[in-house]
Amino acid sequence: MAAAAIVDDLAKPRRLLAARRTRPAHLAGLWELPGGKVELEETPDQAIHRELAEELGITVRLGAQFEGPDGGLWPLAPKLAMHLRWAQVDTGVPQPIDCHDALCYVTASDIDSLAWLPSNVAITAHLAAYLKM
Image (cartoon, rainbow, N blue to C red):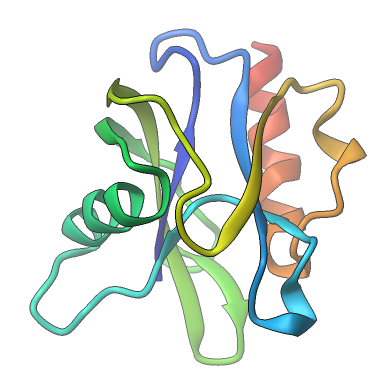
């Protein structure tokens, strides 16, 4: 898996983009960091670019990897981990095109107000610390 922590400014992030899922049914209504599966022929960065174009209609400028506790990755489930990169919108305006019905920017103080996917809760807690800097 690969996802992006899309922020308002890579140099001094204050707001993070969240996307509310519509499917599968057991995840509908929960919020996530946008991204998805890495196809066999892709690198994680290529997957991020493809997924964000498909799901949100945007291109992004990628920043540094947001290092997770599992060899730099973020554990999502047994035998499933996520590559996470900071990103900033380069072209387009994020729209909930596929798999999502709403998008919103959150700050460090309101990041916990969203019902995040269980696999994203630990990640967003760490991201909130960076949004406060």
